[in-house]
Image (cartoon, rainbow, N blue to C red; front, side, top):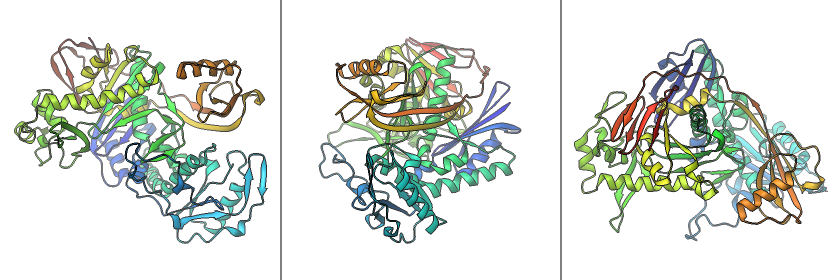
Length: 578
């Protein structure tokens, strides 16, 4: 069976074709029209008679960050029209009182109210559809009414009326995408989903049509939760694919760790602009119910990735006090690092080249200009640059491990991305990690993760009532629980004695528990999962290395410092140990 995975990044589009246990990989430049890059990568990897095609995309993420979404309107309850602008009473930055929040995706003049009100126990005021105003020239509408997570009847009626009035407009109701309490987070998620719908839908449907013409099956699209779904499901709710590419990398890292015999691992993906890290307890990605993207809370299941602006292309400078700073600004693909010879500024890549940790020529025939790197870093010690960027990435690794009660010494570090294997051993030493795993496909591991991904459909049911009143909970899934009166909840796996499990989790997190206090069940999260295809990998190149040494891998370079040694395992993963 041939399985194709294509992951679109900002600079390159990566493809992996797995056929009879053998991997073929390819990288092509990302074009302005992403579907062209996807098909070019499929051709470059020789994809023919493919049975399964999975895809990771940045279309939704880029549209949100660059504000290129649809012209969107918002409909809430009368009196609550300005919810997206009121937000929470938290500052954008704790120590900068004047720093503004990001502008909402829907301006005030397109925020409208409809008369009618539901309360926690039923209808307080009948819905008046005649009070719906004319929305004007819009491409999408987000509908979020009070208590729709408990009773969606008013929202259904409003959405149906809007679809009748505006047949060509993309309408999203909050109960369809994020049926959970907390009004602002639900409204923010719904607004983002509506805002992205037309843009992402056009792209995904164009890709499906182009794939059909090219003789490929309709693609499955990677969700932020780490599973894939159909094109139509992703197009209907594109807020669920905002972390599509990084999620695929985490899936690939989990596969590598499990097959190498490491139960617990940390995914470390260092690219050109940023670094993504994620804890993998049991070899599976940890998930959260909410994350912030572009300054907006998105209340949807997401792999628990922490991102920092530190990558191989991060620009180096001195601040007013003379201290070396790295990033978050990046040289990007054009002009790129100074050593690319295109007039770029000093970067982490230039520092690694001057330290002898990069070959003279990168994959693809790019010859590196050492003199240009030295001129760009004039007066700045390359070793100090690496120390600074490592410190930034160490903070990220500690966020997902130490700060959440996990000892990093109990984990292996899975290093991938173009620059990850260059820095992994030094970071592991700082954290006391004994093993670093460098996959053979380190440069395209997100595409490999797409090949190995399961199909997943997440579902949440809101309760917000005493746990003692709830009956017939599912056998598998997770529950959001809290003591009555608390503002936030803990997520606990569903099990026979859920109350005792919550008390234990509370004691582990906060240092105390109160078995006499009433527990409130906020929500139950379940997922319908179709298992991933069985993956068999064969070694193409065997390595045995002892540091200090530079190892050139397909799509990436590995720096093995003194005191480290490693050998390729049966899957082609380089296992480095101290």
